Length: 193
Image 1 (cartoon, one colour):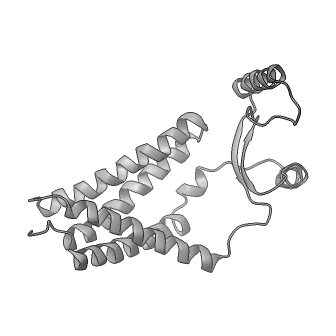
Image 2 (cartoon, one colour):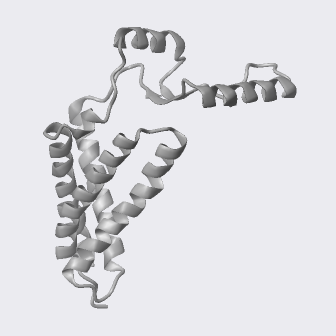
């Protein structure tokens, strides 16, 4: 079981990593699903001037209150923010005032997380019994779809991630895990115990 787990994690993780590199660096679909501000310099200036630190931001933010506000003032502020959320504009964003990670660090973290995810998928697959190769691949793909529904659909519902972005993420997920599933299912057959 340990050998299968290690092989499944390593092979499946490398397949996921190389698929991801191809998907993001060669295919245009991820960038096509992202919009562009009409004046990025103005937005960057506004972020720098108004974001107190790097982190996750929501606009309007119904949960941050000024110090010393009474309960009634807090409730009124929350209700006003809720109304502004419905009328717009609305934004949910990750803001990094210091830029992003360098490419080498990001690639290393990405491949390690892919290997970990593939090892977990392999472990799940090893808990099954008497599945033929095609069904083992299907098991891995359904596991990936399940995690996609758990993560991507709530972002689409609550944070208004665009439908095109969400569909691209799902397509990427199915293809990547389909390919990884081919490798994982080869080495991650059911245990004989």
